[in-house]
Length: 131
Image 1: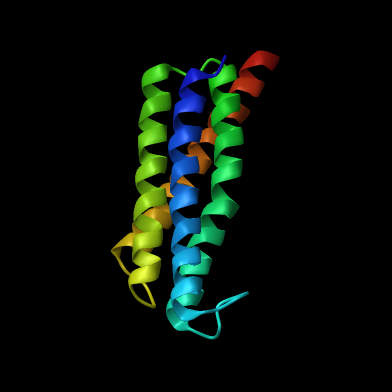
Image 2: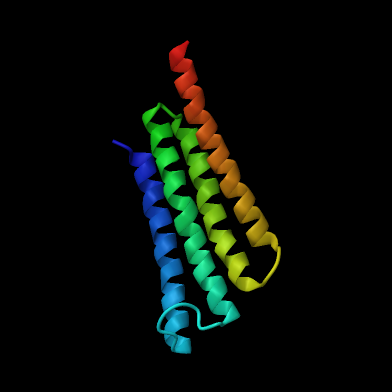
């Protein structure tokens, strides 16, 4: 069983659905059938959704493997909360405006920190098992 992974997979799945809903609302409001219609806001909504779909699956794979490999529950929840926070603030910053801003910067950085930590943890577990 992977109860902690299940919790964060559920939360992150809801975030992806929220981002999908934003794309649908944009397309319906602007009467855009496919794509972004050349609208800058539409481009940002679509990129926010795509970015989440690019990062969340690998994060959850690494998260599940860390839990299987004996990750401390407190550590797992800390990483999970960081990842959820990052995946919430990133699209808010991306849709808000072009260029760098708080949400985009910290959302990206914290996502990368979580990924690096989880990758390092799993690699460390493998190396530890060799010794």
